[in-house]
Amino acid sequence: MTRRFKVKRNDACPCGSGEKYKKCCEGHLDWSKVYRSGSDWRQHLSIRGRNINFVNRLGDILQLDTIAKASSLKDYKNAFTADAVKKIHEAVMKFWPPDIDIVTTLGRTSTDVSGLYIGDYGPEYILKGIVRHSIYANKILVIDPFVYPKSVRDEFNPIIEPEQYRSQTLKNTNFWFALLPWIEAGIVEVIRTPADFDHRLNWE
Image (cartoon, rainbow, N blue to C red; front, side, top):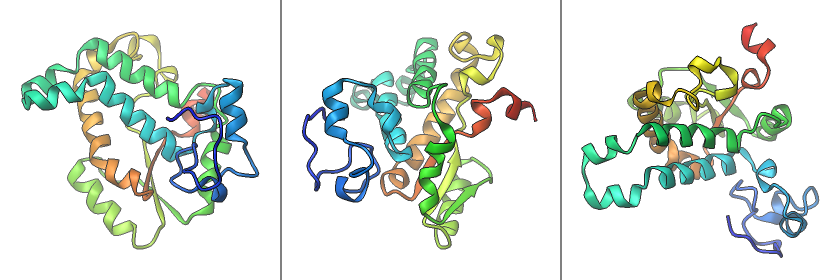
């Protein structure tokens, strides 16, 4: 994200919504003040902003520029080391921190007619589902397939035990990359549920 100290009305809103600042956060949040204060800007991101920043972080962790030059599927798979898996799940928590006000964050999507996708997560199925449901809804919400590290016991925590999550992390990453054009277009938002942040809800 560009670190400018002055956000103009016609600039893209720093929250990552895809809207201009004047049609988004202006009047609710002074982004220029956020930048000047040096406070944590991540807490003010829209869901789209969280999604795009997360995908960018995926690319950094996996060093996709280097892999693309090698143009090898084997190199791509080999990039999913235990250390990469650990860093990817740390990134999940970076953009969805445990102390997030999840109700308020999810509430930002309530201004649109939204649909929650609950079908098969295979890329060939979910993309068909998104196309079909986008006729009826302005935005399709998809629950993130990545395990939320704080919502599971230590033996199942991908940050503590990353080796056992290498294969699933590769699948989840491909899932995210398949949805990226839809995320950038503002049609799909990948969300986390309140149960990730409340153990009582998770058990119930």
